[in-house]
Structure formats: C-alpha cells, structure tokens
Image 1 (cartoon, rainbow, N blue to C red):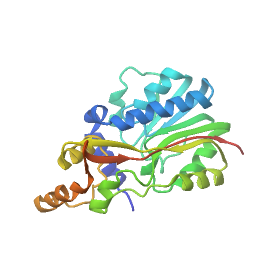
Image 2 (cartoon, rainbow, N blue to C red; image 1 turned 90 degrees about the horizontal axis):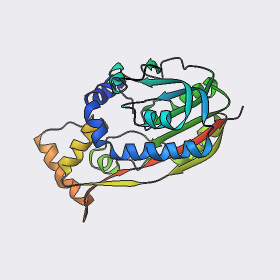
Image 3 (cartoon, helix red, strand yellow; image 1 turned 135 degrees about the vertical axis):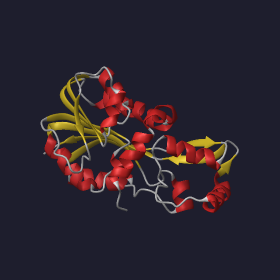
Length: 249
C-alpha cells in the first residue's frame, strides 16, 4: 500500500497535543525499549540519531538514561519541535527520512513505533548500516501483522506490517548482528466502537484513513465490532516488535 506521507504528517500534527495523553501502549513500548537499551548498549555515546521522535516519549527516556554528546532528532513535520522547548543541545533533521540523507558516524540509531510507516524498509536498513560506526547499534520498536487487527478485519484498511521473521531475514541481509528480537501483544479495551475510533484519531494512528466514513458505514462498523466485545469491553490489539542489533561489517 502506498502512503501519502504528507497526510501522515498532518494526522500526527493534528494529534500532537492529544497523543501524550492517549498513546498508552506507545509509552509502555518506549519504556520496554529503553530497558533493552540499558541491558545491551554502552552508557556513553557520541552521536545518536532518532527516527520519528514524535512528542518525545523515547527521546526523554534515552536522554535521561545515557550520556549522549549529540542527539539528532528526525520527524516528518517541524511542529514536533514544540514538544522539546528547553532542549537547546538537540539537532534536527525534519522531513521524510526515506528521502533525506542520514547523518553519519553514528554510535546508535533508535526509533520508537515509526518504522512501520516506511515504504522501502530494506533501503532504510541499508542507510542505517552506512550511517553507523562499526559495531554501532540499531535499536527500535515497531509493530507486527496483528497490530490493529480488528480495524483491518472490519475495514480492509491498514499498514502492511513485517513479521518478526521478515525482520530477522532483512536485518541479517543488511549486515546486522541481532542481539535481541522479540514480540508481544497488548490489548486495550473501550466502552464502545466509537471510543476505539476516537482513540485512534487522538494518537494519529488512523489506520482507517482511506475508509470512507458516512452515517451508514459508521453504523455498520459499530455493529460489526460486536465480534470483538469481551467482558472487559471492545478490544483493540497492539503487536509490538523489539529489536537490538549491531552493525557487524
């Protein structure tokens, strides 16, 4: 599926203020990824590059956990800079990372819940490899095929997610040694299908973006969502994948 990156940027910009409050799973994922970084990586680094920093959930955790001389942040749109008001030491690389030159001589590249938006992941991995110093770390969280599965089943819309096997193969092929690769599932529960859609909109993760909503299709969606009703409420599945890898050649 081809993505309109401008539309993606607009959605996340619109959700900028509500994201911090509603992105419960994404915050937990950032905490889990930071724990893995602390377990596998050096505590002091010269240059670190973050792809898709968003509102800074992961940025703040790594800045507090590691001694980093130069932290370079990337996101699609310049508005994200408002989330970092007192961070004068940060450097910025704004725009679609698939079309921008990467910074070089990096000790680490990190990314929290952003790589699933990439159109050509093998090429992104090549660029990561070229940008890292020898034995530099590539550490990220992303999402697997069961992510937002309820929405995909009901609307036929959603991203094409790589499986953990896809990641293993692509990382190895790109010249990385995999130190950690794991996946998990998390369910959120809501009072109504409408609340599910509101949550997705508030986090910018509108996987249903191309779906034509009108009164009739909304009613049908609400009705069909009954199949995902549990004692706890209406479920929404997240399928995070975590990776810690190192450049080996």
